[in-house]
Length: 70
Image (tube, rainbow, N blue to C red; front, side, top):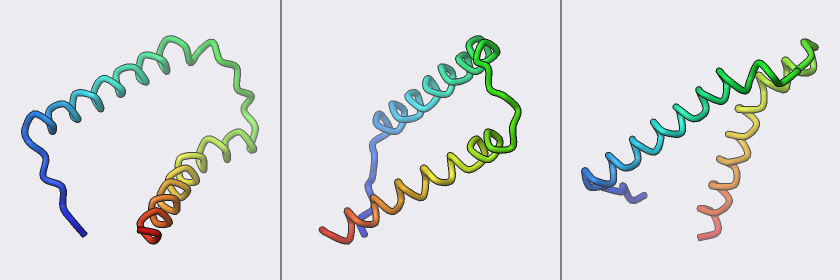
C-alpha cells in the first residue's frame, strides 16, 4: 500500500476546497433549508440518519472492489 506524499501547495489547495465546500453547504442549510418542507416522520428520520452511513458503505465497497481487481 503506497502512501501518497502531497506537497504543501497540494495540501493547502485541498484544505481550501474542503473549507469552501463546507461554507457553501452551511449557507445552503441556513438560507435554503427553512424553505424545504420535510415532514417529521419516523421514516424521514431514519433516512436522514442512515443515509451517510449507507453512502460511506457503498463508497468503501466500491473502492474495495476496484482495489481487489487491480
